[in-house]
Length: 339
Image (cartoon, rainbow, N blue to C red; front, side, top):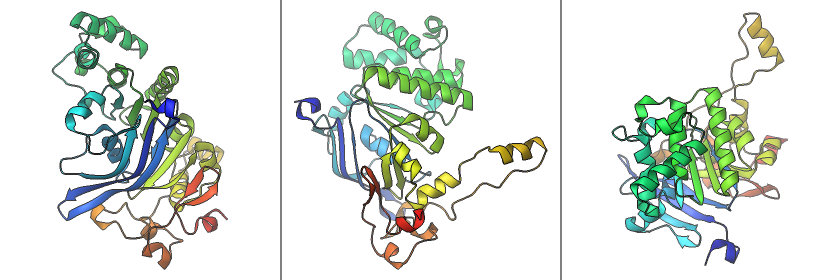
């Protein structure tokens, strides 16, 4: 029975925990993730490198490192993904669940033309012949607005620009009409103008196909413009979540506030200083660094970098608290942070 028929979300993640083997022993890298995605939903996952964003994406794709231990629940259309045999993952991956990787040059095979790479999933999952797969690959390249698509079918990845390669990766992800699209920092390797084009393209395609989108980024500006809801991750946990506009209106967690303060911005004063050859204001920074997996504390993972931390913050993980309906934060002192 489909998720739509039962009223259940397309994707339901409950108490997801991932333990990795490290040189210093087992370390819990994801610590109790909970979120849902419905068709048409756009959700952003944001945080510094090492917070667990990409690991969440790999868990959803069944691509975790060898030896990783997974607990909790991930259900797609009501099908449990935790513990799924690799053969079953192969029927889902690239078919019902697809991913856009952050570095297209490493995501594409340098030895095969892009038309063949797009057609591979069509042949495997849809049973198309070589001719039919090539025709569909051309349609997909035209849909992602790759210039001169017919001629590009026989091009190799190194013959394309970074933006063009990312459009090819998006075409591969969309080939089988997935229900869930995971985009892991898809604009990291691109310049600002191409970033905007790629994000607009992903948003347009998600809206047209009614897919669910999980967009991973470290850029608050991307979150503000590209997703309906956002999850702020730190230390393998979601520390703040809610509608994007609501989170930006009331930045409840000290970590979210730190990310917001550290963003580059060009106001009138900074613009005037730049025009007159003077230095602008120094960017705010969050003191310290994200702890290693083996060093994650028993309490709040952000405590050692937080000016508001007290003994209770270090003793045990803070529970989720409601800032407003649909807006939750994992912090004992969030009310003081927002006062």
